[in-house]
Image (cartoon, rainbow, N blue to C red):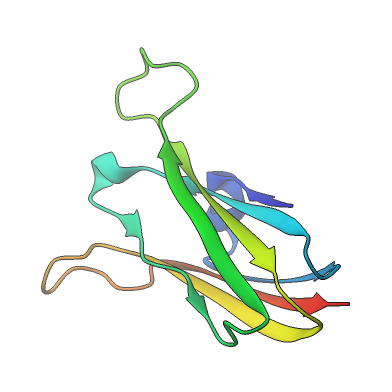
Length: 113
């Protein structure tokens, strides 16, 4: 499981990680997200979908619903299909034309054993 807060991205805009899992295991990636700023996480890009697939992606609002404008989190679930390696890349951008692209990014090298 990978869990990154807004503070993690404030100190480093582009985070690279590594993860090792067993074939048939599922794991989650949780990233800070605040759509009230106009930013959103783009779809996850997987370099080898024969090794790894995305099975779910959901946004969860702030824990305290009374905090208007507070950050929530995006949670992706991935399934390891077979032995091999693959990368997951996700960018945090303002999706409209002329909007900031990849203000934050997350990349993980995943090894499936």
